[in-house]
Length: 168
Image 1 (cartoon, one colour):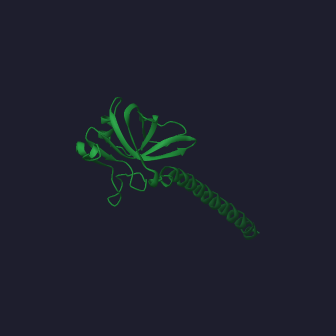
Image 2 (cartoon, rainbow, N blue to C red):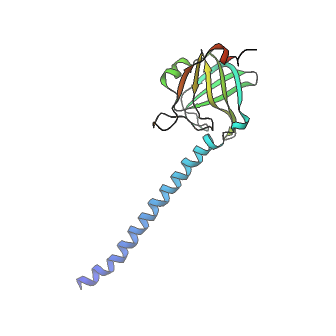
Image 3 (cartoon, rainbow, N blue to C red):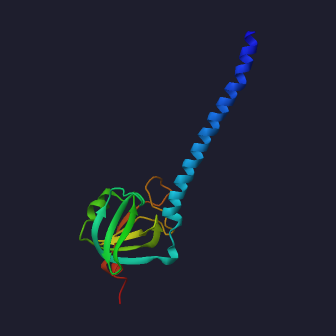
């Protein structure tokens, strides 16, 4: 009799374990899909063929996350197009964050993108105070210092001739 009770429980336990395994895999796949779609918004939406250069003055530096916008540092820049929200991303060095403040004149190279119904300038390079800071690769991927094989966020010193676009 004992053997028959154990035999009846085995299929029930196998069914429960199979259900738990399928539920765990489903949750993991849906989490990866959400992360991938967020990455596409920030990277694959970057249109390098339509890069622009924005020149203006920083009106506000936003380092806290704002609901409905990509995480990371944002600069509100007043230029000839009005106030533009420039997304620099989460990998801006502390040194660069401290150097960017209200009233600083900047030149930003990047591509405009609509994210969650809001126009953002996805910054690739930021030039200010004789410095060139690269925050995205030429294809629009955020540059991060996690691996030696990846492009790292860089800060270079640029001459006034480079900032102004060369001799005229």
